[in-house]
Each structure stands twice: as C-alpha cells, then as structure tokens.
Length: 411
Image (cartoon, rainbow, N blue to C red; front, side, top):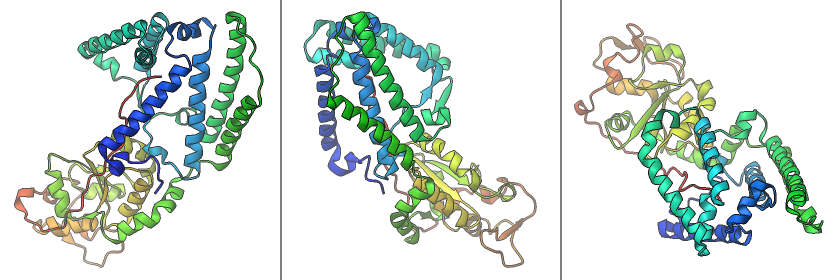
C-alpha cells in the first residue's frame, strides 16, 4: 500500500497530529511573512501591476507541489485518491471568487494573509481579520436565502485533467510552462508599472526552472498508474484479506447492519440486468461490473465516516472483482456479501414457495434458484424482518477512517 498520505491520527494520535499541523502552519506563515505577505500595500500592488510577488510566490508553490505530487503518484509513493480536492460548485465559486477579489483589492489582504499580518501585530490586518469574522457570521445567518444557488452547478471532484480530458502529465507540463510565461510577463509588468529593476539572471534561477520542467517531463513519460497497476501493488496485502475471509460478511450481518441507525449501508448489485430484475435485495442499487470503474469517483466522494459498501453477485466471483477495483482506488469500507445472492436465499428464502432451487446443477456465478416471475425486490426474501431471525455470525465490519479536509482557506 502506498505510504502517503500518512494517517497521522492512527500513527501518533490526535495530539501528535495537532503538533505536526501546528508546525506546518507555522512554517507556512513564516514563508508568507518573509515573502512580504503581511504588508497590505505590497499585496494590493499586485492588482496595479506594480509588484507581482503574490503571483510569483503562490504560483511557485503551486507548480512545485503539483510536480512533486504527480511524480510521487507516478512512482507509487502517493495515493492521489487520498489527497483532498475541494468539490466544484461552478457558479457559486465564480461569484465567491469575485467577491473575495474585490475584498482583496479594497482591504489589501485575503483571509490567510490577514492572519499573518495579525501575527506581526499590524493594525490593518487586525481590522481585516475582524471584518472577515463578521462576514462569516453574516453569511452563516443568510445563506439559507440563497441555498438553491449555493448548491447549484455541482461538478464533484473536478480536476483540470477531468475538464480537459487530457493525460495528467500533459496538464502538469502545460501548467508549468504557463506559470513560467506568467513569471516572465509579471517581471515585465513590474519593470513598466512599478519601476522595478530587471532581476539578475542567476544559475539558481535557471536550475529551478530546469528542475521544474524536467520534473514535469518525467510525469509525462512515467504516466499515472492504472487501476490494474494499483491493484498489483496492493495485491499482497489485499489478497490476504480475501483468503482470510475478512471482507466477506455473512447475510445475517448484512441484515443486522441494514437495521443499524449508526451505519449507512449502500448495497451494490454487480450482476447483469436480467438477474437483477429477476430478484434483488430491496434498496440494492444496480451497478453492473463493467460500470464500476466509472462509478468509483462518486462512490469515494459520497462516502462518509459511517458509509459501508456491500457488493453482491450470484456467488462471490463478480463481487470480488468489483471489490478489487474499489480497493485499488481507495474506496473505504467495502465488503462482499458472503456466498452472494445464492447464500442470501439459502438463509432467508427457504419459506417462500415461489422461490425454488434449480433442477439442474448451476455453473459458477449463476443463480441457484428459479423464480415464478421477475418481481425484483417484491419477494419476501428481498426485505426480511431482522427481528424474526436470530443468526450467529462473526462480525467483520470495521469502519475505516475517511481522510478528508481538516480545514480550508487561502494563503
């Protein structure tokens, strides 16, 4: 399993993780302060094309992080699926960006830089920070008036690669080249509008440019790992779970979990449409095996700390294949219905005269039962009453911690 991002809470506990966050925050604030981001006049000069420090510092951070992230994913050191990416609400984001931009021009700070200014005891930063807190309060009290717009134009976890439908390496290289062009243009604007002297061309600058371009080219050449490649890296660990029957849950545990208010159980039936229409569990969603890969981003995004996915097929074959794909793409809390629909019917369908075993021996991953008609979830066995059964089983569901955003803001 890729070692990064590290699950700090599990490794060093909450307080240890907070210490790491504090150190990172202090380092980030220190870099902003020595870059001049605590001075409102310097930040505002960005919008008058006199001092492009904001663009150069922030874009340098962005492209260095981008190259390192996608190089790390290319060599299997980092799982990008576990890196939090803010979901996109297009029009609310655009309007919010415009409002923040106007505030940046008028006040000389963004929320993050105002806190850097407060830390250095600057009065204008204190007033801006207080204004930010007041604005947050007003927004919280009035957002219900614009709730429909606030939740509109939702695109999920949208990246430039998704939007442009281009390979990750191509996008990384394009952004690096765009940033370098912006740095060059920014320096020209500083010279023209701000009277800043032409910067010296040092070997350090050329080395930095060369390293960034070389890193981007490496990302292009290496590419990003496929689901199959990710599974190959995880196979030694995950195959052991399959062989130990650690992720195959008994039908009794699934029934009990469906009645547990503390769990959000999502049942995914990966069989073909004919078998699904013939019989399926009530509230089970139909997700054919060949559509699992396309559904994984939404499944991962929509999972909460108490979401449990249970995959089911006629036996376990197709469900196990789907489990491997979801495990490779870091979908948390995924389990397989032990024995599939056939075992469910053995457990809960024996009292229904309209459900009978097949007269001939079935082959793998086929239903072992015949039905009077294709009633889907309208058979009694599709929704048994959990209070009518006392079934012994070994509980296997253990919720994993879903790692996501712990905060937000801008620099």
